[in-house]
Amino acid sequence: MDALVIGAQGQVGRALMRLLPAMSLDAVGTVHRRPGPNMEPLDIADHAAVRNVVARHRPALVFLPAALTAVDYCESHEDEAWEINVRGPEAVARAAADVGAKTIFFSSEYVFDGTAGPYGEDDPISPQGAYARSKAAGEEAVRATTDDHLIARTTVVFGWDPTSKNFAMQVWERLSAGQPMRVPHDQISNPTLAEFLALATILMGIDDVRGTVNVVGQDRLARSDLAVRLAQRLGLDAGLIEPVSTADLGQIAPRPLNAGLKTEKLASLLGRPAMPLDEAIETFVHRARTGLPE
Image 1: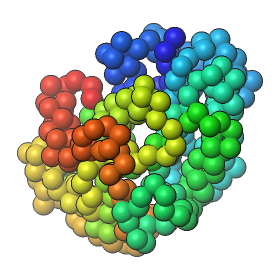
Image 2 (image 1 turned 180 degrees about the vertical axis):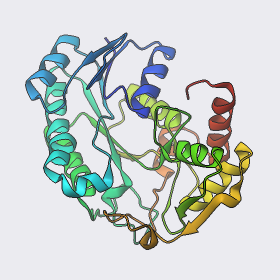
Image 3 (image 1 turned 90 degrees about the vertical axis):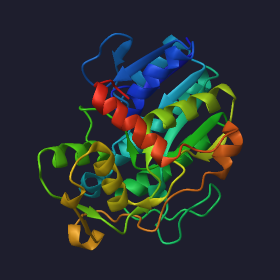
């Protein structure tokens, strides 16, 4: 088997499971609940089960999009975040190393404090909340466990997926219902199409890229500007978007504000620039209008 996708029910996992066969790679996915075709159950906190699944399939590539990503929830459940985002990845990396597989771990721009973005791969990290600390520690656990790893830092991942609560789907749902939406104007980062993230990591996995790479969209902008551009392209009322400060939203966990990630290294590795936002939005709108998954 070529690839194992741990966390195949999330939007990135689903994108990986669609793209891997299209690239002539056999793939099996694991899910926490409700396994289906080419899927099997796995609790990443069960390290013996992780070891058994990886040993049984002996993949060349182990993709690990599984994570606890509810940022505010993590503030009051840091032990759970640590178990899923640190100890789980460590167990996966160890099991992958045992069978000679590459671990591809999906991390986040949250490892930076968001005071001086955009950030390059070698800039010093400064995680500010429980989720951020767990992702930073997850990166370090993977690095310490296996040399054969790719850490893909990403942010604001979106795509057409009615089962997902990603930001673009929230915009579509709220504005389609004629409901106003308060969106921060001071959270600045690179929106990233899930399909582009999946494709880029597959290509780098095949090419045996190692180390840390920012895998994000090309354009860096405020969350409120993204919402307006999505609304306009979807033919929805952009006037329902109310730009507000992050402080006004009263979010529990700290957010990186002046954040975003540099894409020069990614472009060099792929041999082409990161996906422009216009192209990502066009793909999202096409999927929305045809009802196709991203």
